[in-house]
Image (cartoon, rainbow, N blue to C red; front, top):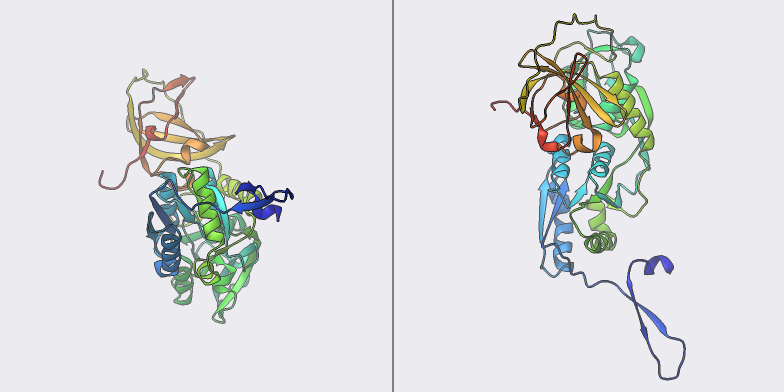
Length: 387
């Protein structure tokens, strides 16, 4: 009973016979301060239409409900939507996107896939008749189909498990596409969640990962606390069929601590891998030391362009090596909270070889190092094709 009363108003009614006051909960007026709610999704919109209708009805049609996203929405698109706070209710699907939501100060609301185990596993799989029987059979001539840089099961955990290997990589795909690439022989093996390949007789599992937590639903920090409470209550009290279609339900927030450790190690392993050139080494090799030349006089330019050519993690900071267009080498230091808010910056590994522009930062020279310390997301700009 106490749990039901938590967070709701309580009023007392004085009774004439002087008996003890009766407590009566007031379940909020459902009056939101927000006038528009955007549901961010990564699956077909029709699964969320009834939820949208339910919210409109419960909120007396005073709040505009928008469904944004589809089964074709990439994880990177979703991450950018949360960075820019375009999604008010984020159905993250992926634990990596749940971590991204937390990194951008989103608040836990409800658990996704409540009827499934709290943890799942990633697998590496081949065609059923493939001669590949285990990770130890993999050679540099083999091709693996993978997801994008923000996928836990089809990139992060797979890369962690493939440490020490050299493979051709065909990446950036959703699970269904990865399975198709393997079945049609366009890839020798694939990486995905166990549910993608585990029950398919045409496929063979060759490796199973450690356990991975599921995803959750998160609410934007731009919403007031009272709005978040009302929305959470509405989500939890929706008809079961609506919750089933939208893949959510009651439950506690997943523990992402182990996944964060795996991700950190994966990023460290892959910090010098170039995914634009095959074959890809899933490890770092020692490079010969660069011959240093006499540094040129320091420029006070407030705009520095160049190409990312290396990354490492230094405590709570990302450290990028930038080969400047001015033939100088820079170290770009970005605190993780700031990096997580840069709209066009993908996973730090994916920035390898990409062109960027540093705006409004004066280099600090320490020895032969020109250091650029980023203090605002607007100071680091990823240069898109055609810009």
